Image (cartoon, rainbow, N blue to C red; front, side, top):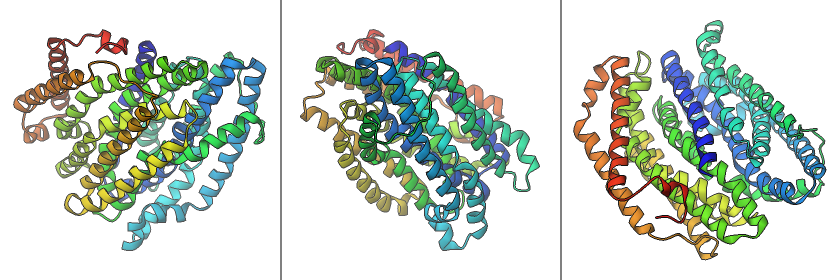
Length: 512
């Protein structure tokens, strides 16, 4: 399992690094202004739905049923399931995409209601124009997630993990070479999103062909497997993507704040998504097929050990990432985005929301590990109830924190609600005796905490002050950042080693 995690994490890291390059290019070419706010709204709406249909509800409903067919049925029955799911999903998404394109102005007005209140007609029109181009992305990227689910179920993790690289390359190309051809340059990014969706789906098709599972696109909503997937998917549409709903609500509320708030939240969220993607998405991707297989085989002990391994890995690798993001927030933002269009004020404001997001990083990743513990057992009702509670908590925190902390308050509210979500998921698994923690968890918590405190102390004591980062050249800033990230890693790992933590603790779930 560690090998699979390394494969997914490694490819995801390549994608995230290119994502940083993409965001660096966007910040330098377009900055943080009304036009970029309009694009991020136009991109966030279909991206949010993609996470519901693709990475969220569909994946968690599809993979357990697919694994059951793979383990217990013939290849012909498995191929029929793939064909019917592809046809049914594709037809539904085609209709949704068509309606989304027609309703683009209405959707933008709903998700950026603050612009309606302030009469920002130009921003609304520009966002609606771009949404008509970006909304069909939902169709292609959800089919990409469908193809990726099949490959993951057959332990072909590398291809789905690498596929997001194509989105980053497409947006970089659109920003650098296509944007000068447009009267409003930022519209080129919307075209880049659409092209990327088509490219990502077609890229995976040859690998499905090798498995003899090339989708036939035969709609059959009454097929037994399709019916089960749909029943599991409907409640999971909300529950598995509560974090994304909270982030989207942040966008709605941020539209009432000063210009640039949406962009600051976007850039800080992108940095927070690096460890969340490399670790959280990788863990969720790897353990869901394993948990589904253990459930189908009737092996509760292996099921619990897989969850335990995921939680330990999250703590050991996620805790230093969260501390590092908080301590290095401003240097990271300055290194990646500081330019003529993204000034010192933008660096400061984006770093505030990044620090707030870092508070919830462990919570975000714990959700990725704990939620599959329900979906692998085809239980979607419990996460729905938990998701509703977490969403309500997030709104309460939003209203309480937006006034004193502005956009950073929205980020902090999302972080706090993530811990509520993760805590309730954990409690449910423990009460149901689905998960039995391994030994010496208390000792592990204290060892990780001590190592994180020492790492933070070294970074705060030795790093240059922010003014030095802002006045330095880009190569100098990049060198400093790489050096201090390396120093932080060495200090953290050295402390863990001195406290008795060894590499085997990532390989064996029963070791403390």
